[in-house]
Length: 392
Image (cartoon, rainbow, N blue to C red; front, side, top):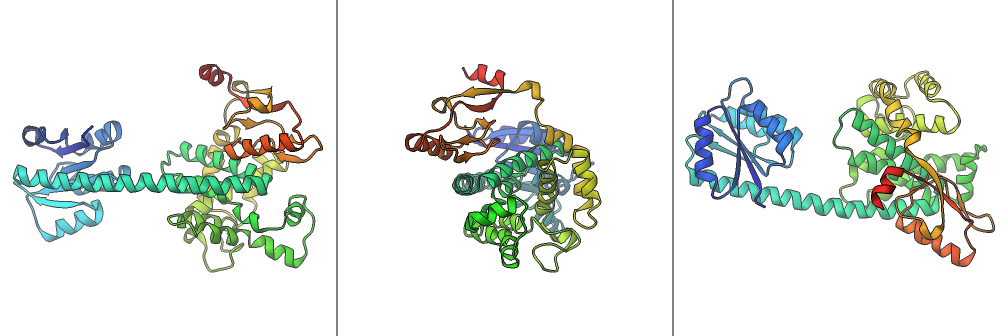
């Protein structure tokens, strides 16, 4: 399939001319004016190349391409104008981040060459993204699988936090959540370097010696160091590093950053993480939020207010009636099922916590334990009856 090209102009005759001269080489679509162009991007995109005229009533080409850059950043943007002054060109490049700037009237062969160059650039951008996403997602899966084996409780909390991030972002129509979700899953990766006995002491609420407390405080810093070894995860590493930083600048790490200088992802994670932790300790949602409001200076007020408005959406999740808790055998356990009970060996060793999502590595581990020491069955999982029926 040929990459799609969108031409936007306020003159139908010009759009018709584009169709006649370019349709043999490209899959051309047109839109009459900026608003129609934005609608096309939202409903019929993605487009490899988007061409816009500068002089359009209501919404000029610079404004149009600036919005397009936010909504479809991978689309390559080209501008045509009859007013080729330097100021217009600079503004188009800075605001709309245009790939090429062409003057009107533009010969069809020149425009065709510009589109071909734009298509090649688009293919490079999308190929790099796909490669990076596959590589990075694979790296994250390995790290989270390791975390699930080393610190089961932290892994379960990370899964709940990731689900909270997804639903919270969806309620606010936030599209780019990849780094937030990755940070949620890797939030406790620093625990892999912490002695298990210290982790147990922290989880059980036992008092720590000064040296132990300092080591535990450094878990986000350790996590950042591990994540930073993977290229392109710098933003994720920063979120993990600042997960315990308060909005007023207190907390960890001890530095001068405060307020909006703290990464927005870290501010969102801080609110969601603390609320889920309060709930985990038996505090009802409403009370948890009330208590968090009393923690002066801890949270970004706007993030906390957004959570207060939307927390029912992302904490409650699907209605209880839509899901069932069923018993299954280890042999019938499937990847991506959610455990509804702890999984333990015949001699009582805990292997996986209730609420853990079954990964390929976890399933293999359970099968290995069954051969060595046996697994207590049945195992309980959460299923959606309609989805199970459709899958069958």
